Amino acid sequence: MLSWGLIGAGGIARVFANGVRFSKTGKLAAVASRTKGRGESLAKDFSIPRPYARYEDLLADREVEAVYISTLHPSHAECAINAARAGKHILVEKPIAMNSREAAAMLDAARSSGVFLMEAFMYRCHPQTLRLAELVQEGAIGELRMIRSALSFEAPYQPGSRLYDNSLGGGSILDVGCYPASLSRLLAGAAAGKPFADPLTVKACGMIGPGGVDHYAMATVEYPNGILAELACGIACQMPAEASLFGTRGWISVPNPWLPASPARTALMPLPLDTPWPIEKIIRGSYDGRPPQEISIVSDRDLYSYEADAVAEAVAGRRPPAVTWEDSRSNMALLDRWRAEIGLSYPADRRV
Image 1 (cartoon, rainbow, N blue to C red):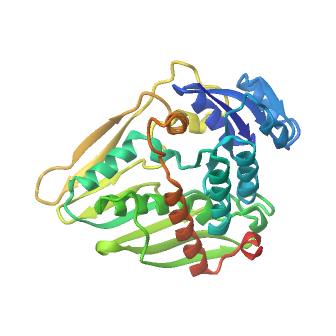
Image 2 (cartoon, rainbow, N blue to C red; image 1 turned 135 degrees about the horizontal axis):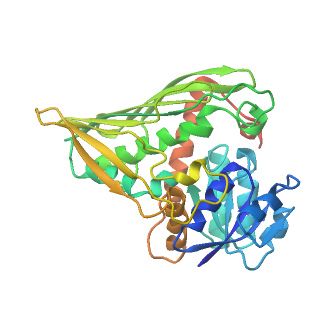
């Protein structure tokens, strides 16, 4: 069993803690939070034996083998580099960093210390995403031509909040636009028989509002072989969180691409051990007169359990990482280009 320490004790840490409880390979050993009382509360609710008030104390805990980093975006790099130097394996929440330069420093630290590091794109660990990439590779809709995907929510503007504060890495591109960016690269790569594709061109627009961050944004990306992708994201507007693929012989619709089978995502307290896992459906359509087909994806654990197990299995050498270092580099580079297109920068971009 892989022994986990949680760095950060916010809402997403509780989601991951629930996921580890249903994983096949993990156990919760410690949690660290600099916010008074938050780590102790999470530890009590999830029966985590050791809460710490300092990240350094958790990193010094010999029982902790891997850390899950869910702090604010600007501190991902520092936390991951310190964890690597402490010899801990690392799962760091998306986006892996504020920019490509920070991501490179994190990967260099992991390489130098000989530890595992993966960006926490949980949807990439689920059988639904794996099957979707297989359908593209198999030519189920002919040659892939276009991809459309979106992830957005509406959060009321609050000055100084994580979402709307430039100094805290707020904005929709980093917070949720990273998902459509990741999926489009995965599928464009699958069409060419590769793990992912790098964009040829990125054109974008966005609304930068109070707080100095993008409240919503869109990008059009051109990939090799004539594949085009439309990416949309927002923290100040509602749109369906879905993905669609269009090919020469048909189309595929994914009603729930980002959170398949995840009761943990909305549960801040431990889920019952008999929690049922939903059956997700990919709807594959055809333009040749045949009715659309439904492909059912059956889960045997929570989405975040798949993520925890993916890390443990990769650490043990039983499977490749669900998100490789090269994949994270490529995604961060796309996000950098997207932000540059709309004139959005952060303090981290100006550090030498």
